[in-house]
Image (cartoon, rainbow, N blue to C red; front, side, top):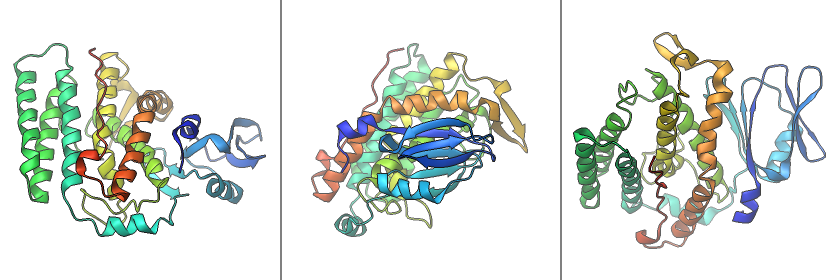
Length: 324
């Protein structure tokens, strides 16, 4: 398993590409060349945690082999950040872990995940400096929903409380940002576009972490199992969504989110391609600032699950409060 000192030295490499750019390997270094064979990026494979390629490109078989050897996955996304394909290097031989995954039926972990998510949403609302009647009412509602979780017995009840709590949170946390509701992939406004991008990056980061231990990513403990959906990753990112939420609100307050940076095409907003690096930079920086917490959460989750520890010993992520 990857120790934290080793993990700390690794990094996620994000490459925005064009069709004329090519990937290659030179002396265990990842190399990206332009159409004139000029090297525009070079990094050692030993320090790559995962490689995210955004846009069209050519990837060599040598790079795929090095990915397996050095243990980093490759995520290939289109210019719209939709996944094209994944090349994994997971620890797939952990049969005992997967056996336990498919024989686990308790709702305890699901409840803990939801409690963790709502707790962080509550903390973000409490962290709003100027709180009026709406904010105080939202705090009361979120606190009430949080207290309900432990006594719930059915999946639909847990999902229902989580959904209502999130609706309360979004409506108050983004009320100054022309909030029209959370509609994943509908892209009804720039905020939903940024959430889709930020949550996507968070998803791949957590996926990279879970792959280190050999989890079956498609077998979750909270989200239902659907064909080709990595339900376990959907589970584990829930406590960390607050990282993206806070960063978007912060960027909006700093004037970094501008209407003119987006285009409206077929009733859907899209981030202009020339602006993608600017926006993805501060979204990724928010995730990177919590890389240690995400690493330890996934590690401790693995240890607790494989050892069948009491639910109280499962990890719990608490968003640091900025008071800003």
